[in-house]
Length: 160
Ligand code: FES
Image (tube, rainbow, N blue to C red; front, side, top):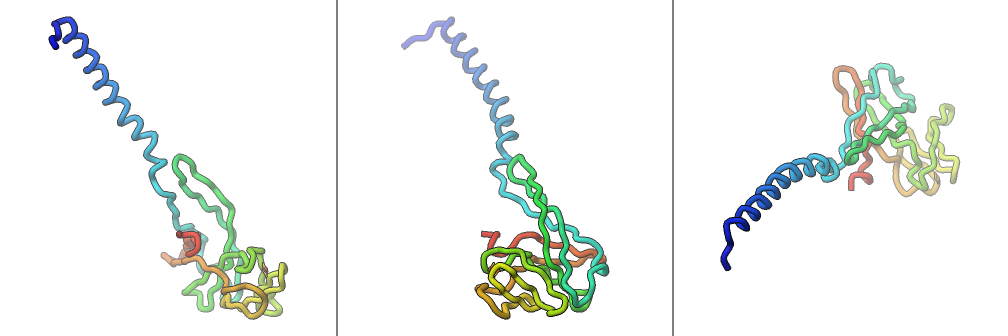
């Protein structure tokens, strides 16, 4: 097959046009699509000054969790029961009962966490004292930095 000069020029111009188009399209598409390929990210959340949390008495703290999911940042109001026995190490409990997820409360007079849904009772350390929950209260990771308390709002069961 022979290609004359006119066809050669025509194909060359088409080829160069496609090459120029691809060189613009590929990086642009990568820029717009790359957030969708990234995994969701979780970040530590600053709860505040650690010395504001009373010793020996669980305190419910609320916080806003921001998660990047692709292009979107999703905000969600959450909370945790924070407990410290010495003002240095802290435990953060997920505020949902490990039976069916009802919110529970701290009973000051009984010094126990009580879940009203099916009458579960948890000790101050989160262990089940009575009722149907299959396991102790779920916990979040915490860390201290320069007197500030941080929380990672991801439970072990949410990591998978
Ligand atoms: S949900 Fe708490 S005892 Fe059932």
